[in-house]
Image 1 (cartoon, rainbow, N blue to C red):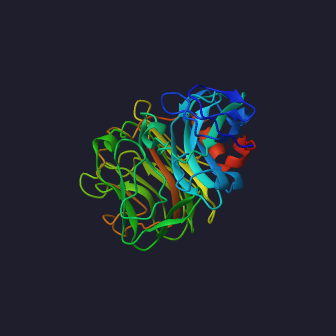
Image 2: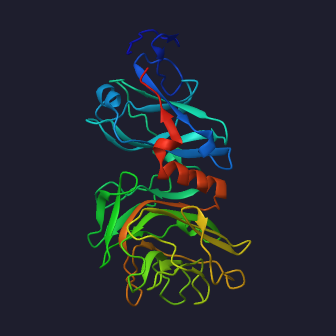
Image 3: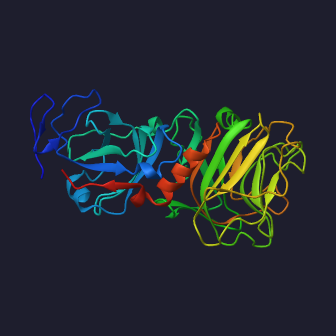
Length: 366
């Protein structure tokens, strides 16, 4: 059922709730909406504050028929139909209604369902998304990697945009929408040095969806390193797999023994969620793949004695390394936080991003 209301007060009728502008007043324009119910059983260790939930619809005929082709009228509210929730629209395909969006949920509890509303159908609406408001102050950079071009935007307010080098394939099919495909020969991604990126040296969470052509390809493959890692005094970051696939992370490269190292945790040709957390106060580094901490044969507890001073960040290779260490495969959804995200937060991210359609249920159009 679709309806239009042309009064200046909040109304609730058989047509359902109607839309609101940023101030909460009736704009008599949002003619229909859908309810999205998040399964509280999939939320681990909640409540999580300001949690960015992935809403991904492979297709939606009603959205295709009712929303503007540019997606400007797509808006999310809390269950009250009034409280507007910040969101970022990564992509919207008007012919099919396919949508990839990130919605900041104020509080996401465990064990109790959380309800959101997706409104659409207002031809006069300004763009309703607020990308930088989705990501809390702990996020230093968020890169969805799906937009073709010479600059890949940082979704946070920090402005740490990324730059593809040597023809890196941008906009390729990926785990969430589109991402990057590395040829394993010479291409990589650069994020220029900044004070905000430097703030991760003492405490951080780095995450990426990654798909290796072969993690044990016979030479080093870099996930990420800093441009000064192999330049004296060599005190940047290094995150890579060795020739046989053993995986490691240096939180500070000033000495060649300061790393976590463990046996190959990856499956070739499979999208996996790779996370590193580091905390200088406790001298603890954890590498996890699909939520499972990697067993390590060496850790940094006694060896990590200084903070890194990373320069430019390089993903997928480092031309300053003797054999470059080019990565072959794909990456998607790179995130950097200057805080250690909790195990529950990361497990909830994994559940949401690995299978959005089971993380929540989408109701019929109202």
